[in-house]
Length: 360
Image (cartoon, rainbow, N blue to C red; front, side):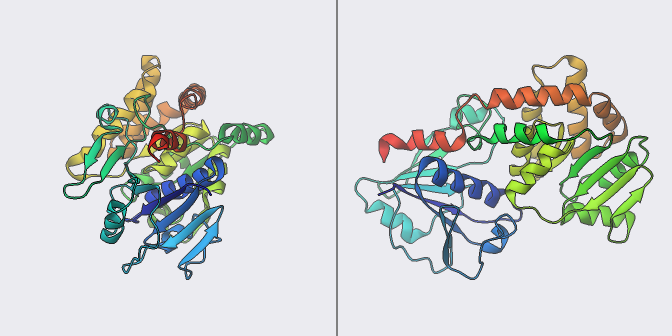
């Protein structure tokens, strides 16, 4: 019988949380041969990422994963050997009580958000005993250093990317993907791209990115502004979105899931981080940019730091964009190197399996 893991995900307001959980669940089932149940409180948010999902079913099997509706009247039928509480979503009380009655006790993981901040090194794997029950929860931090839990990366991902790149034909146009929150300076970027002498094709994701474009240009697209063509695209399932990132020359991404996939794409990218109170997100942004650029000469470091800052603050985008484009080839070479270096470390799914193996 396969070892049984339960993953619990509560969708907040975007696709990042469920995107990470769905990728992780698929990989654990496919590559580690585990019986995975993915509990999701909002199946409608998973549907765009996984079109074959039937949101009316309480449970169904897709890609080797049992996807279950996490309803308010949650009933415990069995307890897994490993339980992943994604992003501190808080397990059902009845499930926790059932965990406490198990012998041996199951392994309880709180899967945290990805961060490049150095404090994650010290907090990864930290134990948190339950205040009243004989249970211990461990914090598991994805991250960019050997002291953290690694990054989501499916087996063969970079080989698939390389195979796609080998098929791409020469094209003089610059292909760009745009995925962002509504606070990004989209109107200014459009105006800058419209002034380009090089043909540009910009693929705009639905939702907030397309709303920002529509607010600036009117109509419903597609739009043609000089050498710039802007094309609305449908919401893409995860694997198709990966292929878009591989194909494009520059990717604008946001949050956590698309941010990491842009790094695996090995193309120049610009990240918009999810805003937090008191601008705490800018500390997290700076921590990543420092790691990402630390091996670069000062001029390229400056180019990347400036574009990331401009896209997240709305200040100085015109000069930052011009500098970013001027260094595009060097930035692409660096990002491919960066992805190759990250891929030398164990991926997140493997790190989780290794972490839990002695205790299951």
